Structure formats: structure tokens, C-alpha cells
Length: 435
Ligand SMILES: O=P(O)(O)OC[C@H]1O[C@](O)(CO)[C@@H](O)[C@@H]1O
Image (cartoon, rainbow, N blue to C red; front, top):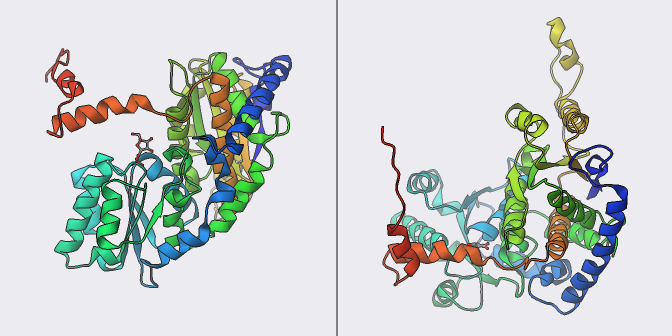
């Protein structure tokens, strides 16, 4: 990935970063990089994620996926949530074509939605990909039990079509052992949201026939750029700029890719940024947006609302295109002479310029095209940017203790044990306004 931070400079935007400030931030980046490198060398928890390009065994993933996949495979259901779904979904939503198996992600426990998803699938030719690092996530286990029952009710042998990625122990590991299911291990020391470039994010991609090695090669090429200066490393330039803008008031980061195929990438980024940096009353709030669509819903706010946002654009230089048919309507002639791709590019450049003209900070992240190599680089680059930002914020980037309260409350409410959190739910302060 390439990064252009020109529109984040104080000469263009407010909040903005002066060149002097950028120089002094670069001194902090040098110190942070030493820490990151030391963590990577030692294989420390979290930092280990940045070693995945060398560590992930794509042959092992393909072998396991081949045990449940055949030429007749029409769909793959991934049962997982958060980091156990978003990385995989980002890859297949970006790369899947019409001839690839459909990739479905059951990352919620909405009964109506889940029932309709299962009802529309040919379970005979559907693969089940169960992913959970802890092996204890309620939503994933509940959905798996429902999916298994659906297969059994349809008289389809789920054990021949199910692959599991989980830790060394836990209920899912027991299931694997009991039914001799093909399985892979979540990489040690790699938090879920940083595991897209491991078996966690790659089984679905393997079943859909994507080039896992090219994904890792793209990530490895990005890893090559990790040096002690933001002026040499696109990932660090992005992380440092986002952090510096937050420190100057841009507490919101709207991730706005200009490609439908990257919409899920913005969701993946939201978990990465929120769960990693949202600590100790700090952290930049990620917002998911999509270009050109959200020009017609959010841009008014981004351009004329509070000066509390960074807008991050992601654009792909190349891609398939489609002519806009000629028209005999004079006013539309300018469209007839263009392609949809040219229109999208013009929309992107115009929107980027419109924010700069209004003095609103924005950053451009460029990839050459949406393919395995470039996507691997983008995912790795944003992970490295996040690790760098975490060092600058001085937070523990790799834990997410704040999510445990609601999990305990949920378990208590369902009779899964005594939890004070569950009691607190009953003590809600009410001020109801009824129709
Ligand atoms: O992979 P697991 O353990 O099922 O967890 C799923 C997700 O839930 C979280 O723990 C948050 O609740 C995320 O960090 C994680 O990606």
C-alpha cells in the first residue's frame, strides 16, 4: 500500500499536523519501531501477528480445506464472530467471483436471519467452517449447534463437511477429537483481530480457491517496509498520522474505501482499530463508510459538521471497468463518454478535494488493484499501523478486557453460572416513554 498524508497537514486542514510536529512524531516512531521489532523477534503476544507472513503454513491450510471441499462445493458457512469472521469475510468478499462457492458468515445470533440463511442453502454441497480462538464464544457455539441440527434434520452428514479452527483445548477441540474433524490451530500469540493472515482468515479463502501464497507475499512485501521512520514506511505513516490527528481533535476515523469489494474491509478495520486502541479513555472511533455511496449520506457531515474526523480513503488504481452507454440526452452526454470506473475515480478525487477545500483532514491509502497480493499488503499494513498507533497511545493493543462484562452478564442471564454482572442488568435505571 501507498499512503498520501498531504491532506492531513496543517497547511491544508484543521485539525492538521505541521511538518515540524511530523518530524518530532517521527522520533517517537523510531522508538516505537524498536519496541515492535523486539516484540516480533521474541515472538511476544500480539507482536507475533506481524510475523505471520513467514509463519503461516498455506500447505497445511489447503490440505485441511481439501478434506471438506469438492468440485460440487457450492457454499461455505463460516461460524465465527469478530476476528474469527471479519478477516475471512474481508478476503472472500473482496476476491470472490460469480463462479466461486458462496461465502456466508454466521457472525450474529439473529434467529430469523439464521433460519433464512440455512433454508436457502443446499446443505449437501455446503462446507461448515467453525472458527473460535477461545472455543467458548457463546454466539459461535450456539450457531454451530443450530447449523449441526439443520444438517442432521436434512439427513446430511455434517462431520464430512465441517472444518474447525480453534485453540489447543476447549469444547471445539473436544468436538474435533470426538469426530476426527479436519482442524487447524489458531496461531499462538496472535489476537483474533490480527489473525486474518493465518488459518483463521484463510480457510474460507482456500475453499473459495484463492491464492493464499499471494496474500502472504503481499503481506511480506509490506513487512519489508517496517523501518524506524514514518517517512519510509506507509503503514507507520498511516498509524502516526491517525494518532496525531486524534491528539488534535479528530477522534473519529471514517474508513471509506472506493470499491464495493472492500466494504467488509471497513468492518474489519473497525474491529481492529476499536478493540486495539479503545482503552484508558483513549482511542479513535472507527466509522464504516463506502465510496461513492456515502457521499450521498455522510459527506455533508464530514465536510460541514464538527472538525472531529479523519476521513481515510482507500482506492484501487486498476480494476475491471464497464462502459456507460451513450445517450441522446444532452445533459447526460458527459456520462455517455465515460466508464463507471472513470466516474468512480472522478467521484473519489472530487470528494477528497472537497474535504481539503473545506480544511478537513483526510488520508489516501492506495493499492494497485483488489487482488490477493495487494489485499495481503493492505491487511498487514493496517495491522502494523495499528500496532504502531498502540505504542504511541501507550495502551495494551492486544487485549480487550472491557468486552468480558457483557459476556458474563449474558451467561448469568441464561443460567450459565452466578455472575454479579447479570444482577446489575436487572438494576437498570428506567425512564420509559411509551407510545
Ligand atoms: O475467536 P473467539 O475466541 O471466538 O472470539 C471472537 C471475538 O470475540 C472477542 O473476544 C470480543 O468479544 C474478539 O476479540 C474476538 O475476535
